[in-house]
Length: 416
Image (cartoon, rainbow, N blue to C red; front, side, top):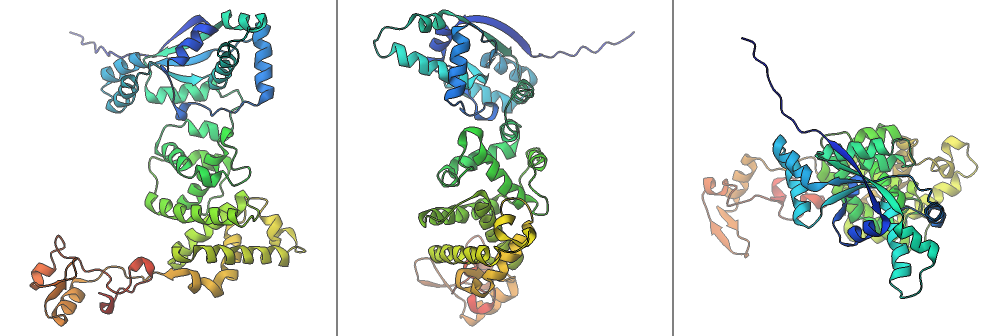
């Protein structure tokens, strides 16, 4: 007897539907189409793009499909596959009232909405050529039974021959890196907004800058080239994410202070500052003192200006101004230049962390005996406890008494 294994599966389906622009606008206004930032370019059309599309509509020469995904069928696929992550994603959108996910056509959709509001919400006569546009038809490409990963692949393949830049393509790569970079972009949007060129939000240059900073944090010896940045998005986890977030907080405060001084900001200025703060920590165990950030920024800018002035006649490889035309180049040399200039002032602005952070059990016992078996409680009172009670970390903690570790406190018995 021959046994035949039957494999059941649900595959992606694609349907094409013709719809009038007025009906499409009506559906869009109802709020049932979700724009997932991970599979959608940001709005980036300028007046030239809008005028060109308007002309194609008037002449009925528009041809590109609007691409959407049917959420309900994706829920069915997720249940069939037993994919709990996809199920949660699609079911959450459905419960919020969404029925479709937009994959391609955001700029065109936004323009059509603008055109509609311009003429139909003002109570004025609508020109015939504009009215004809809303009765003309567009083609809708509707995907069904897709996975979350399929959405990202559809976006990439759909735009492989078009104009999305490298970062817009990276943004659609499914994984923890793209999600993390977008969240950091949201958090530091105001800071990134004051850095020229980086503040080109419509083309995701802000996210590309964060990606470059993250690339250096993950592997400082690799130059942040476009291909290397793309490879970063394929990592399954981010190393020491907590450290990166901590450095970004300080970097953000410093960039804001630099902006207040009206000093010139650039992507290189931003990158160099991040690199300096990070590597002072990694190479020299030095943490920037947040209490003196304004003074630190003033000194940092002073030394940067001196480097520019003192190397203005140097050859390109040592000319600070020319070096910084390439943000990701010669990073090791740049750090050493900044560090050597800043070396005499390190103690004024940084805490040097002790190489020993934790106290040994022996040290805790010795200090506890010297203190007459007394421990200080949170309310300031004292309590007598045995050695074994004191060693129970669930109830008692032996920390840095006089100066916290994060502010340069020593890990010796005198600070226990």
